[in-house]
Length: 296
Image (tube, rainbow, N blue to C red):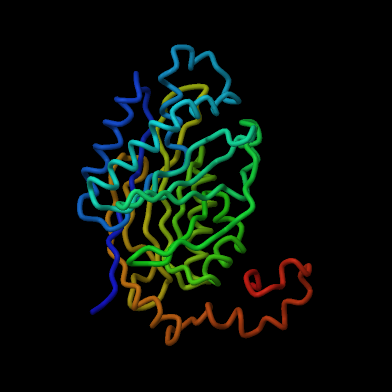
């Protein structure tokens, strides 16, 4: 029997809300559109919607976005409960948290068994420094019952070694919660996501935060997608499914993991194998980039 995974990516539009309960209702509405999916994704920092619950949010500089850490307990409880109730694995996007005095952008994967996996974003986009965000130091594979997955949060997708490190560990699906403020930023991440899918022969889920909530919150440019290598048996453009740009919706798609491994062995463009086969050519790179996990 073929190993298939049903994926749902929430193209989420941030909007002003009056309370955490209103935010939770927004989340549940999206989850209702993802019924039956094995894996559901929310995007990067979609929890900035909670910033609008503060009475003075319009007068508060974006450098204070970490105030949403106030809701961390409720956020985790919400997604833990939904994952259990719906018997789904849910990527709760990422969320700004203060940990030991450091502001971190942390991705969360909630399981139906109550487990929670965290990934601290390792490469922050320069604009994130304005929020006092610091970086994590680990990129690790997550083994789910139906697939091996790992996080590349937004800008991490633009750093080829982040995806390569996961694929060297066995990743079959890269989870990319993303929040880009302009169409330029969106296409940087999207093009890089497609490149990572091609060069690693891996599935890549690019899940985007959108909306125009108003200053000081940034706007989002969003067109979530599920991507594959550009080869048979998939579509020529490598798009398994994608959302309508800047429209809140849930995009659904099914991926076949057996097809992925077959493509690595017998595909027209065996990039997964060949970039490792010619590792000897890459010795002009700095030594910290020439190990197995980062050879390009």
